[in-house]
Image (cartoon, rainbow, N blue to C red; front, side, top):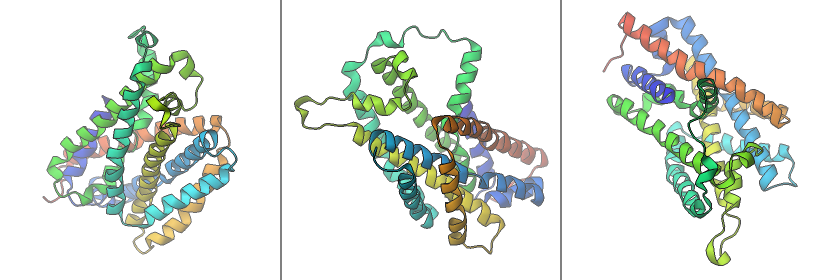
Length: 314
């Protein structure tokens, strides 16, 4: 509910200033110096790229490439992301659209195949968590919706800004439903006690797949492929937002220069996360930063723009 609400807030803010970059309409709302600070804050999105790079290398090491050094996996993945970011922003968006149907299709197929292993007893009892548990869980879950603020930097590309709110709510509802389906089936198949001790339970459930006739084995490889797709999209978009944010302030610096500056920083920061504990700590950091960047800042900007009567040209 919080994710849907703040997605609506972001959509309303962007629709209020059609065809304008974040830095341009923010300085109209809260002056240029403040706009610079806020834009630079969003430029730290490249740290999300570091997190994504480290997660994909950790999962690859665990499930696929156990003899390959983590540093090599991270470097190859980051080079792939850099290649994607080096192209146009529109091309990156179209890659997301291209991957979308593949990812959703395989996720739903996986749940259908595992339906025979689903045990309703594993998800009982339900609705017994107290309010503190629900709030703590909501805080953790909110991390998976952090990233919707990228619309602030891609809004200038929209042809029909008036339809932003509807599209944004539909867009945020899709992962909500997918996460809920994955969660219920994972618990139903593996049980809560088993999942509690797993690092990547969604990959583990793919290992449970057994197709009749044995004509296709290791379904987790297919699932891991779409996992790479989604993390690639997340990492590339975060990297690109950093470049767009910095480019909107420093107009004279070319995109290629920012890529050459940020890519090594992303790699070094990713390699500094040595253990699962480090990933957990940086995850907690991203939760709070995400709440600020996707909830607090857009809400304040929308309220201030309404109070001051600031609005972009139609």
